[in-house]
Length: 75
Ligand SMILES: [Zn+2]
Ligand SMILES: [Zn+2]
Image (cartoon, rainbow, N blue to C red):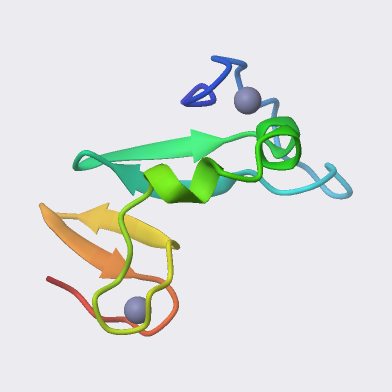
């Protein structure tokens, strides 16, 4: 999956592979954001959906539901 902002493709993550790519959900679609875009645009989290329970943006879509990686809430 390419970066949602700059379309850069994630290289194979291996041991010591640099800063992590962030995951999130925008408009019901799971997206990835590369470390460069996280750094150059501090506003990137404002596009993301947040967990209604804990406010985290670390969400995944599993079988059509959103799952929060922070508190395991799903909805
Ligand atoms: Zn990017
Ligand atoms: Zn949560």
